[in-house]
Image (cartoon, rainbow, N blue to C red; front, side, top):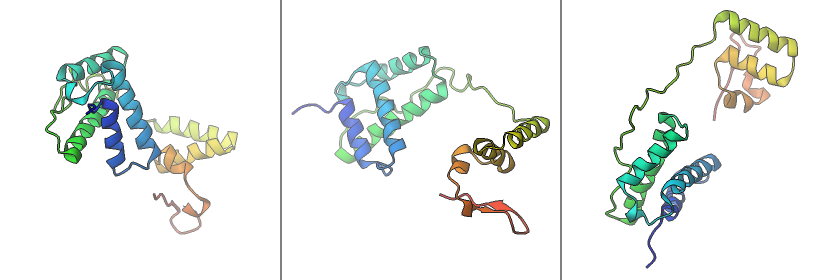
Length: 171
């Protein structure tokens, strides 16, 4: 019988994933596996080695990826191999299990929050521009909500007339 390849493993993982119908999960997983096969090829999964995993890490770091990004990709592969073993009853070694990344976390750049005077200037610029984009930004400043949270709001989610005005953010 033909051997199960890296792409086949991805297919099994996506078919069984609890969020398999979520386009974001599907696209992210496909991109993650495309990055892997670009380095190691679409080889049979029983031929993917720990050396391949290290080669992938090295290639991503040389390409400029941060260690946190590489870790997130490795988590996808580790989960896919684990899911495949569970679904197919395979005794397959997981080359991504407990793998280390040299210098992991040392490339993190911490961001400082905006100072109050900076926020006042940004807010004033939003009011001066008086358009949808700036009002969304002003809402983010006022609430601390993220862009995806404020862009998905309906007018009914804005409760401005009560004793304590609030924005209802829900799934």
